[in-house]
Image 1: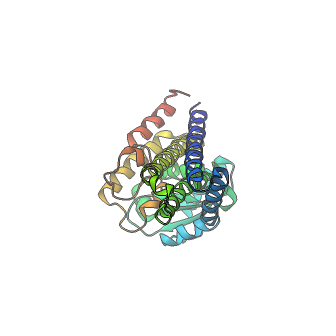
Image 2: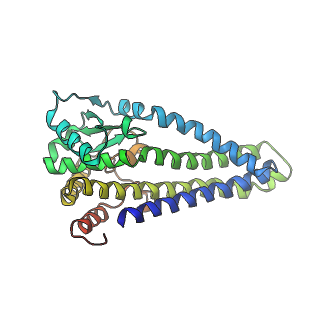
Image 3: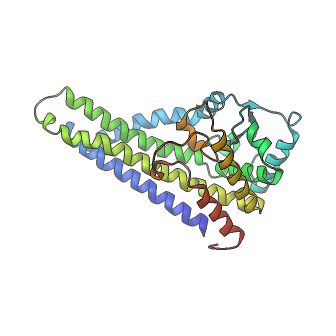
Length: 291
């Protein structure tokens, strides 16, 4: 029931984002071209092209950005044993295993489908967690791969990017055109401020739902929800003590927990649910509440 509810919430959030894009595209198309449908499709296709590059080559770029090194089974048999076990439990191909030489405890998965799956663990997380906890983290990342979350978040990013591109182009267009267009500049400024923020809020909400779903999937795979809950609590403390110094905060949603120093942004813009809510959800699974 929890998984169905999270899937329904994600679907609802996608519907909101698509509706937001449609409304903004219609307004901008009406102002500039008188053909809002064509304008909407043009902006969406442009953003989709950019995000297709991310979908097909993003895993290589991310792994390179964090200097992840592929490790063989002979180099790290313990980590391979854990990853192989959760892959078998999930009935999925075993992902390629990478290690990042970084003291911040964390992990992420990438790859557009299970056949292209890759999981990366920092040296910090391998030092901090025991085997059951590390298995819970590996299962969480395996669930992301199984759920094709990179594809889902790329689609969400496509729509969000299309919204941002549309309003920026409209703003620039209004500056170089006179007549009635400039009289509508206040509306365009309002759109330029509110539309990208609204898209970011919805995209972040989708990301949070995918995290809940991956936690639940990991709990089912291993049958040890409290091991993952313990791992998450340790990760939160470890990241607070030693946040990641290098890297791009735009990549935060990839990781099992935000590895970067928290800013003053509100919960609305967080790519991850609050840790106490994730732990509470895992406790509910462990004790059979809401299943």
